[in-house]
Length: 399
Image (tube, rainbow, N blue to C red; front, side, top):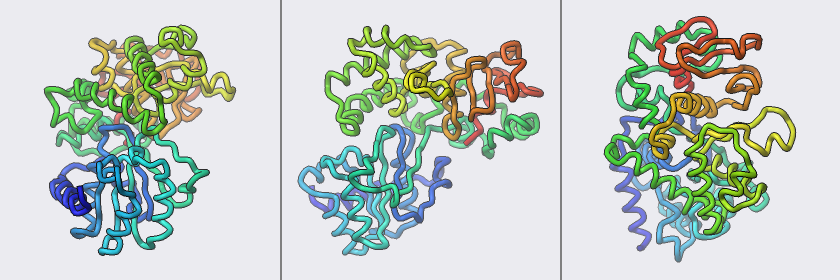
């Protein structure tokens, strides 16, 4: 593959990109920043995000897209490509999967490009596992980092042209949810679509893989464990197999309070390694570890409860998830985007160290949290509620 082929591939991909649907984060990114990193799990739309930006903000040839797992880099360096592009009028490069770059010093190369080519913009995506070693290349002063999550329930409704509605802050949802519910209900019946979202609404590629969606998610899981773990963290093959066994155990038991010694025995590991693996699966956006909010090292290391990261993964790995599992998984997933969510010994969740939330069905009572300040019920299978009872679906309007 020669350098002209790289440019041809980039042009073809950008030309074919659709501008009809953009993710929530598109408007949040400060696109004029000289260096941008978008981190996120596979399948949430990072690459499409770049194509859309290139198509709307640059003339032909000014911006170059390239995936860093391209065979071209087996015998070439990134900085050589940028030098060529810059000297031929290039203004920006959009790099995909920076963690797959075959050389160890990608961060140093990005720093050198930033320092050596004034006015040239660098945008790159990375696995949610990506850890930036600030000691080797101080990107913290140069780069703005964004974390990209899968679609919210609100985004799902917009993405499939069901309803175009705004997002709301957590405070608004808790304090004036009755008013917001009426605004939403005037445009859509949310319960008509909520189950569909739980099944297949989190990843924006469902419309392309409707018949094989669960299999595609399983393939994504395997790619994350087989490939991304090794390229981002240098995980050994024997450990990869342990990760798969651990994820299987979790998927069949969530949500559950983990017995670390029993889990470690089940995957033929030890306690410290099991703690580390649980943390890594959380960073990989495959599970969601809920920790105690208390500030002690033991409590920070051990998850009090473990969920699958989102309900779509739960359905892909579990044939018949329970209603309670789906409810709590959805709530934890939607809240973690912009809020600190921790284990509450009295309710299901503590949010931002302030709000206690108990999740349940329409018959759920306040008995468990009745004496707690700032306590709320997130109620499933209701269109609207009153007082400190809030419809569960409405927490899908946070972003």
